[in-house]
Amino acid sequence: MYKLNENYSNLKESYLFAQINSKVKNFSSEHPEAKIIRLGIGDVTLPLSSQVISAMHSAVDEMADGKTFKGYGPEQGYEFLKESIRGYYKSHNVDLETAEIFVSDGAKSDLGNILDLFDKSNVVLIPDPVYPVYVDTNIMDGRKILFMNASEENGFLPMPDSSVDCDIIYLCSPNNPTGAAYNRTQLKEWVDYAKAKGALILFDAAYEAFIEDPLLPRSIYEIEGAKDVAIEFCSFSKTAGFTGVRLGYTIVPNALGPLNKMWLRRQTTKFNGVSYIVQKGGNAIFSEEGLKQIKENIAVYKKNAVVIMETLDKLGIKYTGGKNSPYIWLKCPNQMNSWDFFDLLLEKANVVGTPGAGFGTNGEGWFRLTAFNTLANTQEAMQRLEKVL
Image (cartoon, rainbow, N blue to C red; front, side, top):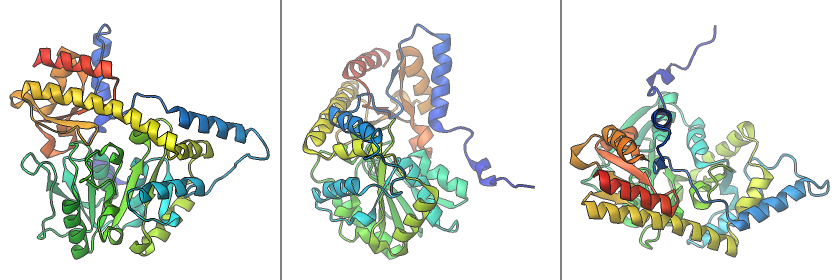
């Protein structure tokens, strides 16, 4: 008789965002007249740029012609896209080989799938609060998890503790959910710590395009020695609005020894690659006009973040993030717990955010708002917030 993976019984009953959707759905059914404004789930609202759409249309036409039709592509991505990604990193003073770049359907998938390469005995170090996928995928595998405290006191940027031993370290900068970002000195400490412990850093750079402070690195590979200890994950979802299209990439440096070949073997066995049409659309992002257009879209979200931050400043509410991140992490007023604050905003302001408790123990009493909406909706949501608070 077959046996189940009992580790699933250790997971929370439902995924955080599924729980939020259920609450919103129930409220909407009871109050159909309410105009709900969502500043919770980090989905984008602006359409794909014209440069991307044009490239995808062209690719569709190619697929309709026997001379240019494409069947199975390389599981690790077409060379034209890998070369463009390589050039993008070069513009930030990071040298990569195309063989170190693996194109995928998104960072979330790769962050879970990369665990195929590691024995279940590895001890994992994860910040709290944190993106739930880091925790849940390791629970599914039955690994021991240690948590490092991200708090108001350390600016939600925990630093290494030499007394703690671990094998795999998760870092996300700019962070989801807190919006906090590590500077070069701080990341160098993490690189040195990983080397000293013989550990590997899994670095989530999904929000790198929102960084505007030149003192903040966009890639961990801007840090000396990082290629020896880090795998980097990135996504086109927030950078170029590909949440519904699905495209990302993972960097596995050759300096990591067998890991590059192991990841190639894993992908060629379990993954058939991203469609040619999607990769052509992604490639268009790296053209001069493509980069200009995605910067214009990101500027809209940044303006939304400013609107949120200005409102919180006016109300005297503490927060992190916003300037170099699409996320604003605010302290719940009047010492409310985060789910009570969620209910208050939903019921009284018809605004949806994300309770910090859903991201870990240290998230209790905090709340995440996102800048991924229209300017008009963001402004209206903040006006409602002011009335309620």
